[in-house]
Length: 335
Picture (cartoon, rainbow, N blue to C red):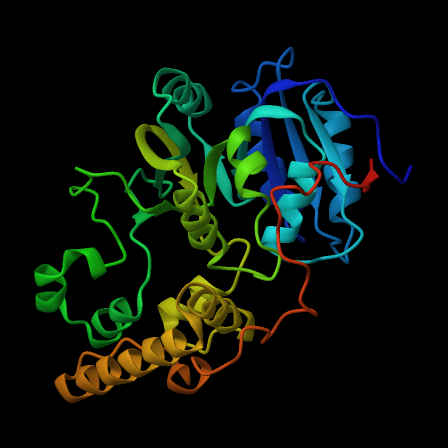
């Protein structure tokens, strides 16, 4: 059946899982959510981002076969607009006090959802909350960060740890032992966001096809006075790379896809203007040269060239700006 469904009743929590050709990952993720969800007040919405295979049908079949229909449902997006656009489809098709955006390449540890919800209920100052992300063996992943600035590009590209220690606010990754203050942003591999944030800030910016949309959204939220928090007692396994080639390419220093650099350019031009983007690139180039001289360059293949890609590089035609006044409902095909 296609078209809008009736506006669903208000939920305590809606978990939104985005799928693009990862039905096995989605099914494994849903299995870990089964004991975390209270069907009387919570739900899980899987958004299939126009997968060109049989992903959506396989997920719908798994929901029926495993008896998950009381708390899980599938929404089929007619197009693949990327990470932000796909999650926006889920946001528009839910009505909840809190939404958790959850990658398909995650496995939720016992009571992780309850711990996140309890933290939000007991700490009204936090509007966006990230859990502890970890590897399957329990080793933690860095998932809290500071905003990127033109100066952060110099420190990162140059592997200038000494400069980062002198100017810690310009080191993007926050080490796990350094969470004395709130992070600027947290990874959207798993993130809990109050409905008030969407009502005031608007949707995720669909001009980002993939990457940088989480940092951009937290920065927009901070501009409206919302605070980001981190809850290490809520543990979520993040397999990393299961939904994107960027992390694999970065680890092997292969060339990243064009959409990564398009998103990077959009972030810097949005927050610092074209001159700020040029400054960020010049800082990166200077750091890269210093790293080469010192034999410490970690740049991936052709990064020196790809950073000059424009904001629309590697993605479909740009979509309208997000707006707080945009409705939190949109038509989509439901399974």
